[in-house]
Image (cartoon, helix red, strand yellow):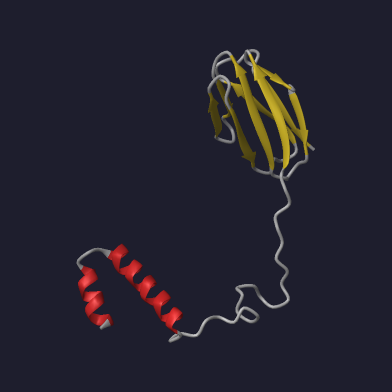
Length: 143
């Protein structure tokens, strides 16, 4: 029977065959013809391992009004991922960018978004608002 089903579904595409196999396996489990994994021994976690949640990222809020960043400078720990929440109060769009790291984020007036930045090496890293390159400069100092 399984051979006939596979031959029939072959002409309908791989995704249909995959879905049929998944459903047949679920039906077999429900009928008891296949053993269910034992939660105590086959949980997907190695014995003795402890499941851990990732620590929450340090978040910095940066507000932009008329192309001016507030604050103008952030001090962050070096070699640690962190999150920047951008709030554009307008009146125009914001293009938050760093060419060296290939990071770019565009926000319309009144928009709010975030970026998760990779671990930065120690030093000064400059981000600019491409629409306001003179006034829109944010310095991030990784220490």
